[in-house]
Amino acid sequence: MGPLMTVNSISNLEVFNSAIRSWNAGDLDGYLSMYDESVALHGYSPEPLNKAGVIARYTNIWANLSMPGCKGPLLAISDVFEADDRVVSRFTMSGVQSGSFMNFAPTGKRYDLPGITILKFHDGKVIERWSCTDRLKQLMQLGVFQVP
Image (tube, rainbow, N blue to C red; front, side):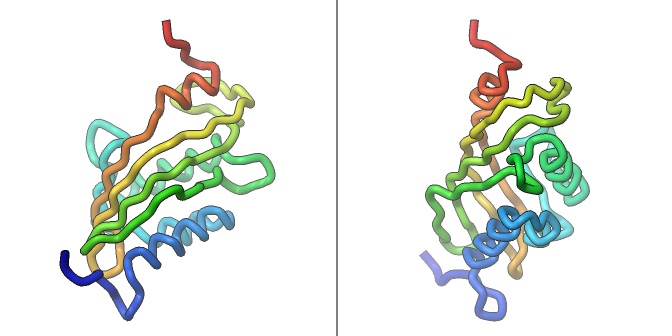
């Protein structure tokens, strides 16, 4: 394994941790600043999301799936590590469905959405991201889907 990738002595892991702190402090713009203009985010739509798609996705999540008393959902990081130009984390996003989500009317129910993500950095910004979340679990918690 090669040396950790840094920009101005700030590791990619530090960039990630700072973005998570911004998210949980209610600073969506601070979180989004982690993403490069050329970002491709895989796993949330059939085609990768570009920067405009990333902004639209998280703006919608904040508007409809926030934790009560917070500007957005909460992110808890369970595991995280850095290797070369990648940061990998296991996370849980938690909130309440207070608005329309995936064409489902607001349920007012809480959810805890677990996931894993891999972020690829270049010059201190995320240029590519792969994510996998347990969307079925979230939809079941919201009461909009039941397993037959």
